[in-house]
Length: 132
Image (cartoon, rainbow, N blue to C red):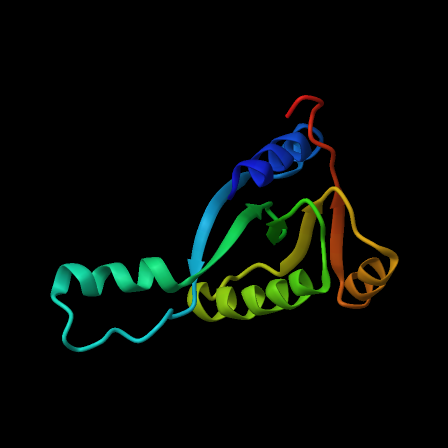
């Protein structure tokens, strides 16, 4: 996560940490770009780590797994991103628990709120601390 996203996540965590059992950060999903055959092994190993998609936060409870995107301003881009992350996470990790989607944000306009609700994506509003 970027510094602003990290501060936003920490502010959100103050109100929600006890609802979750564990957190994972920058979780890699998907295949990334194909590895060119001419690359030496050390460089070939770096390609997936550099080009796979990264989920900001995986938050787990005993009942479900939350895929969380952290952004100061939620947009429809995040809707598509979260839906893709859910599919890629399911393919890569084959979770036994249901997956929930959420965005941690300071702002979402009415259209974004409407589209997220239609897709069962939770909007968690959070505010960074003053001076951050």
